[in-house]
Image: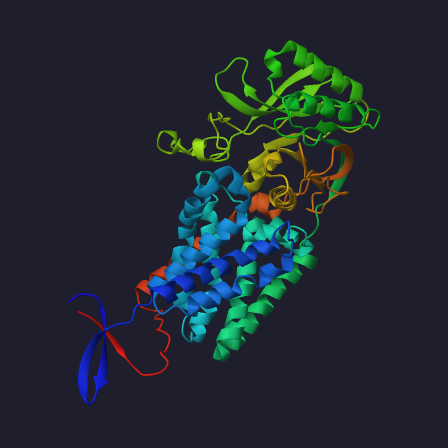
Length: 536
């Protein structure tokens, strides 16, 4: 005989009967997990309900801790991760179509071991030591999931929980100490403390202590972490030509960008920034285009940082490159994008997955990668202080904290992001992307400008706070932002991703203790008639 059976007593005699099927109940629970996993996305732009991040994980955690066994807890983690990834990346549906579902399911697997961890520490009635350990280990496990999915090949660090707090000054101060990772860690700790407070009446003291500790950390960040010291200003023009369609779209967009740039003449700018792919040919191999851009730089009295999406004049393949053009011509400073968007700019394992191009708007040809970051020196305006050195990033790269940290350590005083989210107009993507620059500014203590073709374009000071209004996706305009400079070296720039190393130590210690039997989670008590389940 095979399968689960239930032993029931009937008239003093044992009766072995097949256990009732629970497939319907399991499916309903899986759908509930998907919904619970999607809730945190409401804290991000465009909904922007940032405060929900402090409670958004509570339903998911409560569901996992009630799992009847480790297998079900893992499934709750997996399906919750599936819901989170689908909700966070739903705007990719027009590009990837049905292929988005298996991708989300694959990435959701990263939360499966987190489900085991949550149940092991929060399931049943946790002892005081187990509840105290949960306050550290559950957030640490979440952080390791964020680390794993931050690998470029898995889509990169888009939608890290801490990034939802981009408008909260205390969270930005925390980011200057431990990056976006420290903000994520604290948010999950708050959610874990709330679960202990609500679901474990005997352990409410631990939940209260956890909330008090989190409040202490936030207060210390708000009033104890010094703001970056200002050391001058830089004047930057952001040019956003807007949406141009039809066969003359690229040329019309270029002409509009030129007209907007000329309107900035006489404003004593240090730099004018265009969005990603604003130039459709490589000016190093096109003398007429190079002369056209040079004349424009001379007319406005400032260097232009344009972005080229084209085949190289003297090298094979297509590159996305930030190119600096001064009043005297091409300066020779060029940065080629290093981290490419999976499926958008290249197809991973193209011989195996190349069919995706027929099912959605995936890359027909793989872009080439740059080899190293570049810090550019701007030509000065003559008398006065020299302008800061510029560290360029292209689009997707602004999601990676380590890239802006590297540019800062290499001497960049201003970080520039050139982006284009025109494919996703009307979705949450443009606002989410622009908000990432606030975290990068706070982490590095350097001002950041985020210039796009079609919005959202914005600028942030070295403390991560936005300077002036952002240009929305309905705007075709050029604006000037005067940004404070800072030479302060933040703790994050100095020490890097130390919260991740701490999380590895904590989770490793918990796994070792679990292997030794230190955390044994009883199954939830059954209601009604007692039954014993046997397998034959």
